[in-house]
View 1 (tube, rainbow, N blue to C red):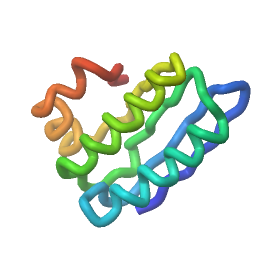
View 2 (view 1 turned 180 degrees about the vertical axis):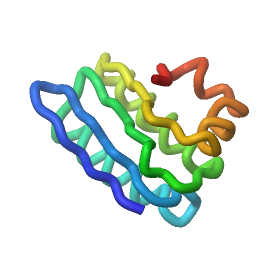
View 3 (view 1 turned 60 degrees about the vertical axis):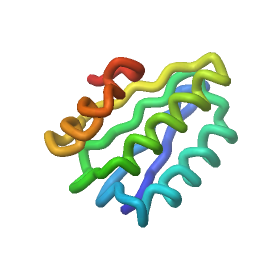
Length: 101
């Protein structure tokens, strides 16, 4: 599991790969928080295209990023959502808060 963040002009993109479970969620959120605090983005796109598995810990990661972006007056988008992760996120209603692409 890894997170790669890139961006400029307060637009940030984070690509998450591997398993997003209780073991990796803390590390993923730590990296996202560092990147968000450094860039203070108006927009964060969270790319889940390389995620092989997600459990409810992934919901927490996305909601924490959503809350932090809200504090900054920014928006969070989630893209390239694998089928399994999409089921987890939609079952929790995350798609009603966060823009899915």
